[in-house]
Length: 457
Ligand code: ARG
Image 1 (spheres, rainbow, N blue to C red):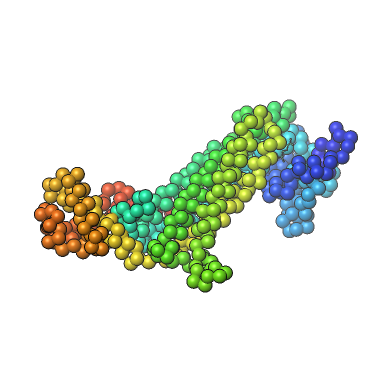
Image 2: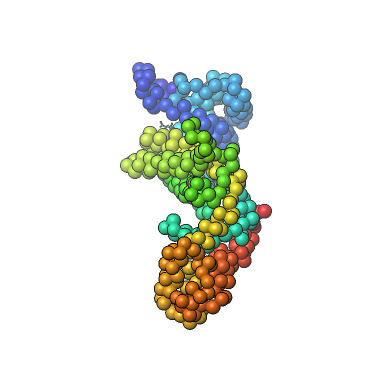
């Protein structure tokens, strides 16, 4: 059944119907479509464009259609072109004449623009909440590990000692920014396109602000041509989702490295790892690998939509129908990834000894040895050179800076005294870094206090 058969004398070719149809995927927003129609009808009646009796009949029938879809007595079938046609046809089938008045002053162009916005608006909130759950787990891990020393890296080479709290705090900041990006997107997209018609508004005296308010939008959109052809909010959303995936992917990469036999920093819970069909000893970080892998898919959605939109003249073009499958897929992918990632890090165990030993073995306190000399009057450039010699000496002997005797120190520079050991202990290295955002317990405790408030804990 078609909404536009009047002008046509021939049936649509079957392949054309299938190629053109979107119902296989836009049925996902049947609820939003029905909600939008209820708003439209309520506004039409308020404006005297539709009788109150018709409004009543239509709204009851729409609510029944929603219930029937949900309890499985009404099946959304592929013979319809899209979810809009399906709902309208079912309505007309059930209530006749009144149902035929629903589409007064409306086009599928503003209808689909509305449905997609309503659907996306809810998903923006859901993803925001999932990120909050992830942040709560990161917060818990941070609070428990403000004194757990690990090596901090640059170039994936051990650099300076940090703590697990500090390292995880970096990810806290990333996901916090991701949430604020979602807040911004929500605010910008929260305007109602309904009433824009096909592109040029309508001749009926619609009250667009009323419809907008009914659907909890901040207001109605300003330009009817833009209203039906704007997909910026989806591009922004896909960009925010891509950034979330980029963060999850970096984090996953670290988990994979930390979980390797060579590092052994962490152990993933059995429930969050998988085995090999041939190698009995294997316990693989598949979840982290899949999250890293699926990042490409979400980037792909962003690039697809940007490319789809780039040559479109105003206003609506059917190309825009392509926004749906890729956005739905990106949303489902990101939600799954955040939830699984949260469970994975919530259950993993840290090998604290291994992490601390690793920090000790990698000369991560070399900068502090140089700072010691500077504090005793040696210019930094000279101090850098002297500590370079110490490191070479240690590498040659297979020992750490902490293992050298005072005589050995003095042989390289007489400035060293026995307080050098205290100055280069990993604990000192971390605890002396007191500036805002640095790894000391004091600085991290201050950060945690803010995070606690932010999470409402
Ligand atoms: N399925 C279409 C879409 O997703 C709905 C709008 C159809 N409008 C039209 N003029 N054919 O964009």
